[in-house]
Image 1 (tube, helix red, strand yellow):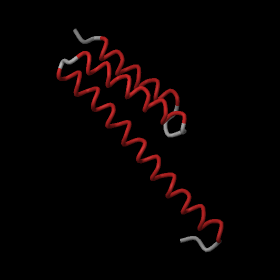
Image 2 (cartoon, one colour):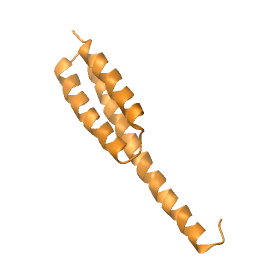
Image 3 (cartoon, helix red, strand yellow):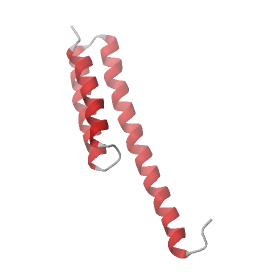
Length: 87
């Protein structure tokens, strides 16, 4: 543990930010799983709705600095292609 007051504060702040990032990433993973589940079930309308929701969640995570813009773009692109390939 740090001895200097400012270093102690940085430890606490970093813990708070790490927890926040973890929550946001968990939400993104859940949204992606919902899209994958809809694709696996073959329900195109549900997949489109889940994709719209997941895209919004991923974009918010990117704007908060949790994901790099290229990472979020790659995730969204892959999901979109998967949904568009459905019959």
